[in-house]
Amino acid sequence: MTARQSRVSSPANTTLRTIEALTSAGLIDASAASTLAPVAARYAIAITPAMSELIDPSNPHDPIALQFVPDPRELDHLANEAADPIGDIKHEKLPGLIHRYPDRVLLKLTHACPVYCRFCFRREVVGPGGEQALTSDKLDAIVAYIAARPEIFEVILTGGDPLILAPRRIAEITARLAAIPHVQVLRWHSRVPVVAPERITPELIAALRIQGKAVYIGVHTNHAKELTADARSALARLADSGIPLVSQTVLLKGINDTAETLAELFRTLLSLRVKPYYLHHADLAPGTSHFRTTIAEGQALMRQLRGRLSGLAHPTYIIDIPGGFSKVPIGPSYIDTDGNLLDPDGHAHAYPERG
Image (cartoon, rainbow, N blue to C red; front, top):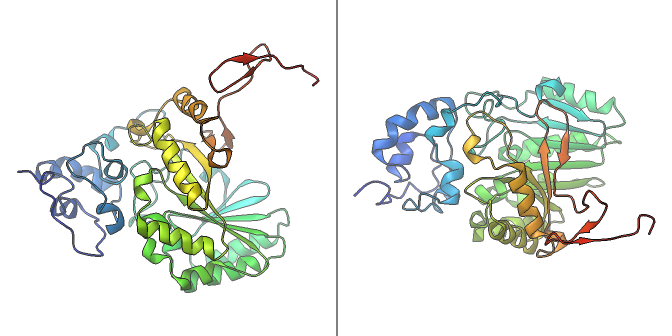
């Protein structure tokens, strides 16, 4: 009997971070260890207990395993893939600060994550070998940059995953940014509520909230199987505290690239008071081609969802133009070349140009 056929439970509250740990937990065959070692040497591994407990080792198509367990195909790099596929470096004004759009900035507080997704567009910089959390001096410079630019309305806090920071540190950052009068919105992007829900404590929630400013959390989740009872409780604690929640999902081949799978995810999120916000077309990160659909396939899925799924449950299907040229919507058009309106089934309907 192989390791994949006989699951060995990992120690309680232990994040799996090595090939040896994955083998001991029964998530990979011992015979695959040597093949996966070069992958682990190149890209970080971390699977939290909340996620490892969901994995069915007997299912080669398990949607959780496919997201987090290393795969030899990650070393297959294509010519059109890039270490910085969305062009962060082009818009980096200070270490940790990306200013791509006029009214908002991206603040990368840490390069560590509770889990490491195998399709991550920042996979070349996150992990134990990447840069560490921002120093006080670097944060001072970032706060000064934002304070000097009244056009900055929103600060998006990301990483890595910023919610792995201690509540004390989060409270400090929240207070410093909120003290800038023209900053009205703080948006935290995180996997934590789903993959490490135990971290959503009263102390963390208190650290996120600030009087007089709007605080949002963008929750990254890709499959309804991730939304365990503990994750649902964590999301409820955040929603009950008054923090609006939106979601980000990556369209992933073999994981969520069916209308049924996406509909289940988006309906579930909406029922948990999380507004589906973005469905990202997978970026051209190195070694991720096996995750990518075509744009046409993504558009076909969005067309299937239209009219069959509550409007509140529809995210915007978007892509980051490689090289740092902006994020743009790429959903299907509902107007044909003759100016007719197209219903979700593709039938054309005339409509007067001037109403």
